[in-house]
Length: 231
Image (tube, rainbow, N blue to C red; front, side, top):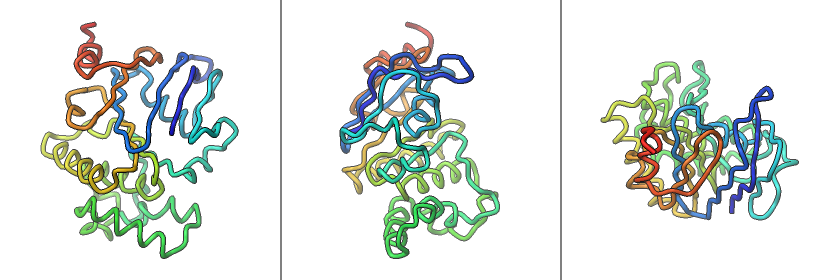
């Protein structure tokens, strides 16, 4: 479904991806493991069209994404939850969740249907839906970012370090939400980046390691050594 072949990208002349290859099949859960600065976020941003790609290609269902502008890529059913959440603090939680669907001008009935499904996966947010996003805890903010990605991510969800900075209790709650998502939406593919491979042992069916912008297939055990700097 999502194919990345020989992808290189740069930021202000500095190469951050080096001929990266990665595939994501329908309904699969794939982990991308690497230490901070290895290029995990850059790869997700490249998929979303936010990076200057210098070589290689990204395709979705066989269609090249190279000429597709960033603001149009969510229309393919690709949702993105960045590490820093990027919520509008003055908006309510539900307004933040609805925003990408409204930008895409989805019908009100479809937005309502998607919201219902999102709240089934994340019932905690249903209770908080009218609160300003500024009052969210770190864990709640991560869940709100996941919900917003789900609003448009009917085919693929990209999660950038979703467990980063979460206390163990909150990390467990987020993990439970991902398991519910996996059970209730088996056709949605997940690409999850992490620096700590142990957090993804119960999720990932396939694992890639990234180091200095180069991507290779790996086991979670091997990724654990790489992330710890023991390879």
